[in-house]
Amino acid sequence: MHKLLNPIITLHNQIRQAVVTACETAALEEMSTVVKEEAGDTIFAIDRVSEELLIDFFAKEVAVHTPIILIAEGLDEGEVVLPPGTRPEEANWRIIVDPIDGTRGLMYQKRSAWILTGVAPNRGSQTSLQDIELAIQTEIPLVKQHLSDQIWAEKGLGVTARRFNRLTGENTPLTLRPSQAKTIRHGFASISRFFPGVREELAAIDEEIVRESLGPVEKGKTHCFEDQYICTGGQLYELMAGHDRFIADIRPVMEAVLTRRGLALGICCHPYDICTELIARELGVIIQDEWGNPINPPLDVDSDVSWVGYANPDIARQISPLLAAALRQRGFLD
Image 1 (cartoon, rainbow, N blue to C red):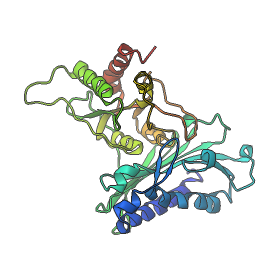
Image 2 (tube, rainbow, N blue to C red):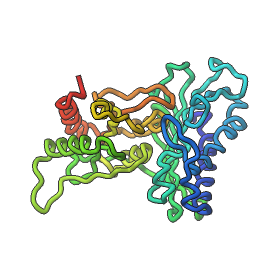
Image 3 (cartoon, rainbow, N blue to C red):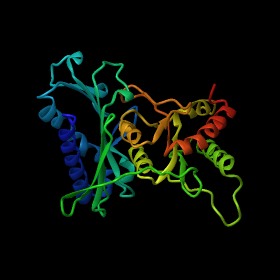
Image 4 (cartoon, rainbow, N blue to C red):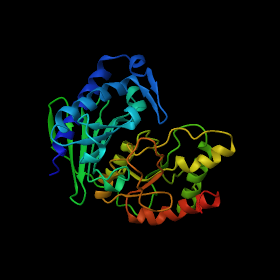
């Protein structure tokens, strides 16, 4: 067992409890107050609940035993070396954290958010997603929800999952299994289009993929469904749990279209949002970029990440060529 697993699980449990308690006791207007604007995202008051725990915990519970570089949004320059005074090259680990992924859905009590953490050996600024050897994600449930899931994986050692009952305090084993369906027919398949700007372009790509893979819609029937879950960790979970068969978040690819329209690229997925990709991979979910390559961004808070998830190889064989063709037709791929 990785020596950082238990401390990080303890941190996740503390954040889960603190955020649920804050949501139970604070008004919506208070939790949704904007407290800071950053290049990568907007920081809301609810985010501060988890951020306050983050540095203090790692300083007191982890860095006293092993020097680390903590990477998270909201930190100065996106990272801090602990304990203070340690040189970056002396750190043993780079730990990237998103203390609340899915803030917007959670603060309006629409949908669960997730705490995400990835741990990689410190290889300097070249340390990247594929270096992560331990990943943990923990569900932050809605106030009205008493069950929440927690999943972790060590590279090459498979996945452990459990379900926490916050009414009884019990954890029970949980089995996650990605869909084994051979097509997206009658399943959930989505291209993320959360925000204005190029929604119609993304929707057109979505429509083209469905039409080419499943043929024309029959009267009174439906081919497949979509689910716009505004949370990368939640999207990964849906693939891991067998709920979704195909998800593509290709917002960075749309920058050329936005530029032609005189618009800026808005918020995108960042490395801290996708830092638990290892768990999905260990379960057999295929995570690639739009070219069909493994995603491997640096562990920072700035890089825009485009990713595509397929529940299994059959779904990848069905959809990947169609996605590439749709992008190539629009001049997005070389």
